[in-house]
Length: 576
Image 1 (cartoon, rainbow, N blue to C red):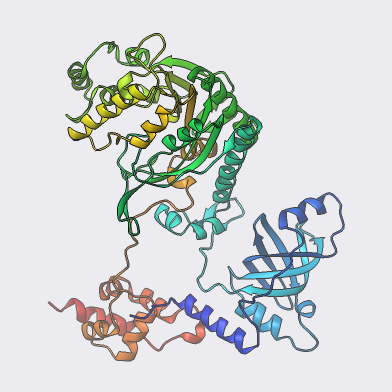
Image 2: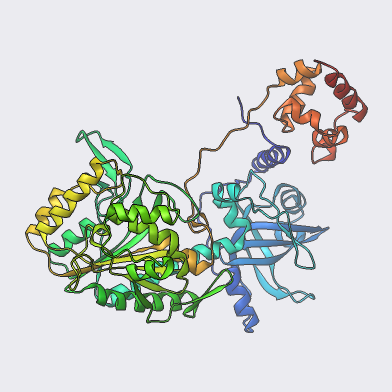
């Protein structure tokens, strides 16, 4: 079926055709040279600088036609600025077509233009560009949502539906200007973190996304097939084991911003594709890494926010170092009243029943403790807090605690009740590592589909010798949620994963013709006006149907009396 266009889309295509008839290319190929931005114009002009020749480009966001002179608003990458456009300035000689027809009638909201002009201030005190040259750069064929703000500052017709915003992020960015600021802060966060690491002499690297073994974390992977090698491959769930191979190879410090993929659930804090930063530094331990992490985050937050304090909902979170440090078993004791030290899996399963925590029979000791902490403790830590010294069963890649072999030298950083960072004194004993991998394999055989695979090549690398090393990973998406005061991970991802878009079922003109017993021409008009099904038309008042069929332009009015539609409705309602 051919694409069904709305009235406005049809009008825009007619405008496109007319531009071409007038010899105007609505999509020119040549570069348009700009020499400033809207925000720079405002700043410089307010500082008293004369701006006699500014050249900027962007979208038309509004037009106010006033005879031979008009005002428009142009939006570029830095903001919006008012334009003053007159017929005599942009037309050549006696031919007024470019103003009277092209600007007034054929240019629409959302079209891209380039302008050259002089800056002045209107009587209302608004910085404005008096345009003396106007170039059409790109014709928009779909209307943008028109968000309006009244004199009292109230917003009307806002583009706020999450489904539409996330699916059509390109529209969201155009009409909701605060959304762009979120992603600017995202980039600033990455840049500040790189600045801190590079200042310490650590090297940014890249490791494989397609891996023969999905190692470095306990998670369900995505699997694909490599045709040339005829082998299964996995999208990485973590980049840890490859970064450690580089430490084996002689680098003292490496880090990577990595896209990881986990074939698991989706909610406000989880997306199957997400970004992590992992860093590994030789000759360090987890105590050093705690000091390093809190100093790094204090630096990053100050860079991005201009302060170490961040507003999250109704809370103020302070990233000033040092952060509080609490061993995980003490945290469980504090918040449940139960001392789980020394308990085996069966005893821990009983604790979970007592605390009304649902657990799977395949869960080992480590997963059970993780569930207890996650359900009963994690939410209590709002200010940045290092949760330390996890049981050995929870950390198959982590070195055993120097004072208690039942624990590991590990911490997680909890902020606002969510894990932000995870770090270890890395396990570098290849024999111990092999035994822990084999324990993970036994869990996998019991049905735990998140247990780790055995990576024989990584074990071989450890057998060549890895120096004492500390590693740390940060969930970048969650960190940026904190820094931008967002409650959903979808708000900090340009294009979050979504279900396939459902296409509305479009009734054919023949269906309308048959069910309504109307002429073929009328049925085609109903479909072209945007009606998807007969029931939609019949649920509307006859005057609403009449208005929709008339369209947006008076010259398109159809000779369809409201009474005639009412008769059709009565006829249809009387049928079985």
